Length: 121
Image 1 (spheres, rainbow, N blue to C red):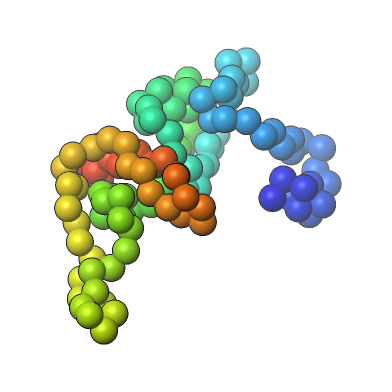
Image 2: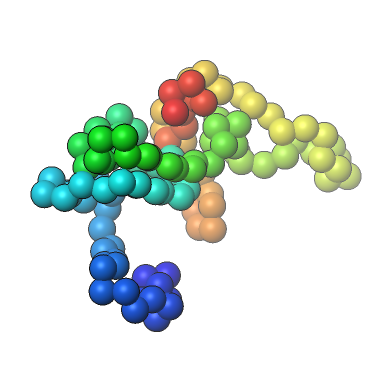
């Protein structure tokens, strides 16, 4: 993805970095907007990420992010509840209030995600 992004842009003000969110350090710069798409449910500490973002935003800056919907991350089995003919009956929402680690499969086996409620986000 980074290679494709580099190929599609030629703005010298854009830099691309491949690193864990927890390792990012922007202590010497400020941003008007910080955006993240579908990443925070893979990070254990949402509050520490929020603090990092807050610390690098300009006054009045915006933090825009998306995560997998908490109804989806509430269970390790991330799939529809189906009848014997594989007809979808409903999406189970077990353990929704119990925040924490979920081991699941998504594009590969043994994926660690962290479930949080909408209220926590």
